[in-house]
Image (cartoon, rainbow, N blue to C red):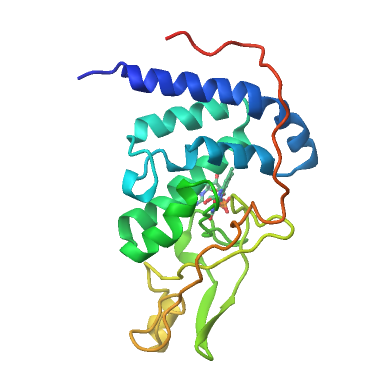
Length: 231
Ligand SMILES: Cc1cc2nc3c(=O)[nH]c(=O)nc-3n(C[C@H](O)[C@H](O)[C@H](O)COP(=O)(O)OP(=O)(O)OC[C@H]3O[C@@H](n4cnc5c(N)ncnc54)[C@H](O)[C@@H]3O)c2cc1C
């Protein structure tokens, strides 16, 4: 078994490390202090194509393997864990379920803007009283007037909506039927009924969570204190 990185992976790692040093590092401390997502940095990550690394080329991704994607998360995490988890969550938690289980239309609607760096995707599981015990989630989606009403509270969700950004709901579908729904004989509150309105959302317009409302801008230029790896 080959454990060494391929020449392409090594080149990719050098590119991301240089980006991390020049763009991510200079903004990291200030973003931490203000407890804010450095939106301009995330936008620059999108322009570099990092959000499309493991997605198929026909969706605008780079068609690379997961190890290559891990290299990007690792290199970003070396200088800023918040930015690294933003990439990991948007791609791994937000995008991968759509790639694996979504329809072709959902892939085109949600993954193409992610790959282009125009929108972010998040995954909202955790609630104040449901973390490790995912079956304890209380949030419910109920059909009403041809649309859906969401009732519940979420916590610790990576990529929160920044001020002025729009949160768009793709789909709410329960994988596990909560016990009390079964006992009540009703449908799962988080699973759409077979008939009636299905949860849908408009395609992202003008950016997505984390981008809207943020003025375009270049991150601070600046050098890092370590050069990119030579291997
Ligand atoms: C950086 C970061 C990013 C995150 N991003 C997201 C996100 O994008 N979307 C999202 O939905 N959530 C996100 N989360 C939340 C994360 O999924 C939860 O923190 C995690 O599920 C744990 O839940 P909790 O914090 O409520 O801890 P709890 O579930 O309350 O657990 C507390 C402690 O009890 C232990 N414990 C729990 N159950 C058991 C058990 N049965 N047996 C033994 N020990 C147990 C745990 O190991 C832990 O030490 C994020 C968290 C972090 C730190």
